[in-house]
Image 1 (cartoon, rainbow, N blue to C red):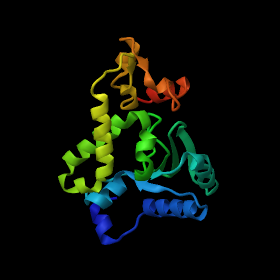
Image 2: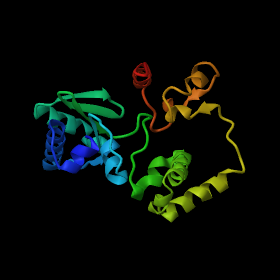
Image 3: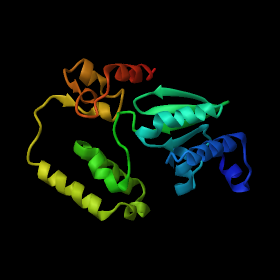
Image 4: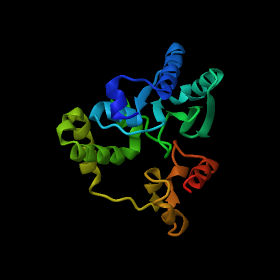
Length: 209
C-alpha cells in the first residue's frame, strides 16, 4: 500500500482480503499480532508497496488458522512447515508466522528472556542495534531487560566455549554454510530442544536459490 493510498483513505482488494482474514481469525478466537512492512509503516511513517501481510501467531494455532482460512476459500499452504505458511487471494498474500526461519524466537516482552534462553546474545545484539538505528526510541526497551542481559555478558566474559558448533546458521541460512560443509563445524540447528529436522533444513536451504 502506498503512502498516498493510506492518506487518502481509499481501499483496495488487498485491504479487503487482509481485513477479512483478520476478522475470521478474531471470530475463531485465534490471537495474532500484525508485523512486517505494514506495522513498520504505522510506527515509522515509512510506507512501501508490498503484497505480503505478516501475521504472527502461536504454534498451537498455526494449523487451525491455515485450515480455517482455507475453508473460507483462500489458497493456503505450509510453505516452510517449521515456521511459516501462506494464505493467498490472487496476487495478494498473508504470511502466517509462528517463529523465525531459524526455528527460534517467539517474541513477547514478558517472556522474552525465557524464550531466547541460551541464545540471549542475539537478543542483546538486536537491542544494541535498535538503539543505534532509532536513537529517539531507546526508551522503549525496558531497563530491566538491558541490565539482565549486560549482567549475563559480564558473567560469561571470563571464559570461552571450546565446542566447535556454529550458531551462525541460526542467524543466516546461507552465510555460514561453508563453516558447516567445509570447516568441520556442527550445525546448531540440529541440536538442542529446538532442533530442526534435517529435511526441514534441506528444504529451507534449497529455497535460497
